[in-house]
Amino acid sequence: MHVVIAEDSVLLRAGIQRLLADENIETVAAVEDGDGLLVAVSEHRPDLAIVDVRMPPTFTDEGLRAALRAREQLPGLPVLVLSQYVEERYAVELLSGGAGGVGYLLKERVADVAEFVDAVHRVAGGGTCIDQEVIAQLMARGRRNPIDVLTPREREVLGLMAQGLTNVAIAKTLTVSDGAVEKHVGNIFSKLGMEPSAEEHRRVRAVLTFLDRG
Picture 1 (cartoon, helix red, strand yellow):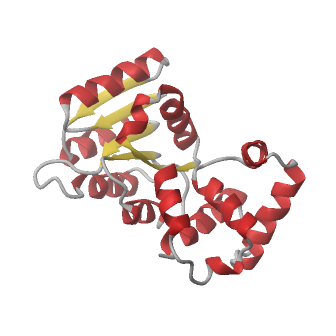
Picture 2 (tube, helix red, strand yellow):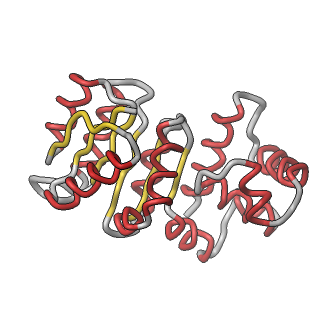
């Protein structure tokens, strides 16, 4: 796997690069701003871009904007965005294109090597991975349509889907059968009005509805 890293902190950038190297993942470019990201993506056409949300010059959302432009520049480019704080709208904006291969994690997750590496592989493989803290905050809010048409268990399953878990992983987490999870997922798609289409596309749309309802 070939990865581009866009992170203005020299220490974190080097740390991520070393962590990936230990997992036999090659960093083909490590840059410090959005412009550098776009150049690197054009030159290397990586399998994944790992991008900090806040980068120079204003340290607001330059990284996110650059990540979205990079996905336009290289359609289907998997992007894993890192953020210092929980900012739900960034996760929504990433998913708004309706495609997979997107992730949003708090930077503190990098310290959990197994969790971070799992997210890297999941997003690079075309899946989604939304930080559990984002999911927890959304679940704690007062719910409005269309999500409140779901049962508590279905909302729980949808929350795990948003974290990027497969049906098998959800079944293990909830200690239920694979068939039970498949039934819940089918009910979620039906209740949210998701017409039959590619499974991954419907999962992304369902997760986006979950994230965007607040």
